[in-house]
Image (cartoon, rainbow, N blue to C red):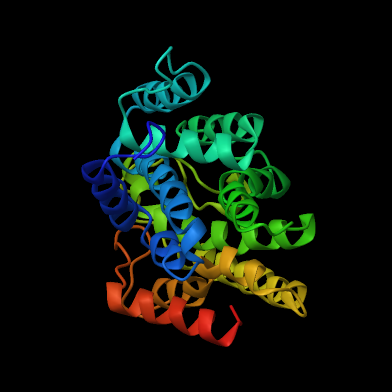
Length: 277
């Protein structure tokens, strides 16, 4: 084992973090070629650790401090090249070996930090621009790790499909923390904590736009190699998420969507075997 390779205990920690906080990306990584599987799991663990900050932290400033730690640790890991955080160190090594963009990492972290505050996106365009960074960056990195050059149109459609589903899933957490995920014109009352407003029209809009974006992804993938499909395998969960969010008994502002691990795995496996998202 070289100094660059994580210890077995650290590998277990990275896999557990990925499976717990980014299960769709973790399960998708299991279907990747063996030579890139660990790198995709490290990517999943990293994104899961960043994305869970907004769900855990009530005070935006505290969340921003946590995001800033990741940013600063990436940029200066000391003479040893290690930060002491196994997930960060493993993904930093992926960045180095795969030539991933540190500038894109900085933009990704900055977008997450901005989203911690209560202010809603200024417009639909601003909302979609945030999705492009927050939700598109992991897909671009996954494609790069797999050796696929994901074009801008496909990446944007993937970011929109995934990001719209994620927005619906994050809604209960955002409202509990007093944050507005949607532009003001699309939100019934985004600043009222514990709002009793009916958010079903917003879920309907997210689902309609998300399904349109998913159809765009499928169209862009026609004729592409297996590497492209593998990079986008998490999108196999978009439709199940929307169906759960639109359920007659689901209260969008309060209820947390849960999908069983075996159901997640089956959806991703079916997409892998069929070559269709």
